[in-house]
Length: 132
Ligand code: T46
Image (tube, rainbow, N blue to C red; front, side, top):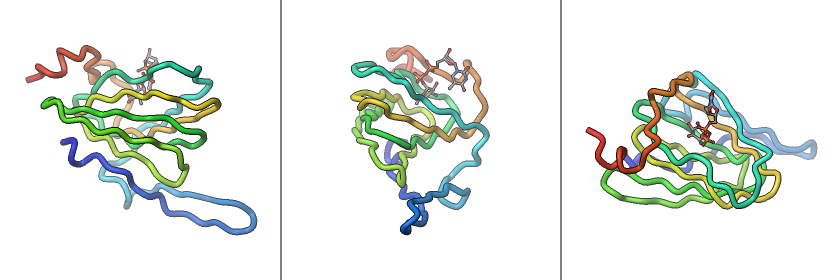
């Protein structure tokens, strides 16, 4: 459900030595089975462009800034800008996502509810809108 997508603040600590943020299970509605990250991203590219059948994800802009546009099977859309390492975007399963407008040197960290399974991807938008 797109209504379950939201920005979650990541708790942490900041003092004269800098900042530390921690994601532990109490702030996420799923157990993390995989961590991956996207970096060296050229400007003007779009990443994502798919939905997941079962997987839930939590995206964090560890560095830089980018937009995440999400859409459900009913065509409801939401646009988020991620640009703080102490917050993340929860994207539930069955939500189309596109990542755009990457600032130079951005890093996107993703915590995922499952290991990589290509069969969990819906990479065709019309197939997503008609998914039964
Ligand atoms: C998502 C967005 C935010 C793997 O082999 N293992 C992995 O864990 C991942 C994530 C990808 N791959 C392979 C699959 C492709 O051959 O790496 C290649 C690039 O993946 P993809 O084109 O799916 O990358 P993005 O940035 O478009 O999408 C990724 C995630 O796949 C996706 O789940 O939500 O980041």
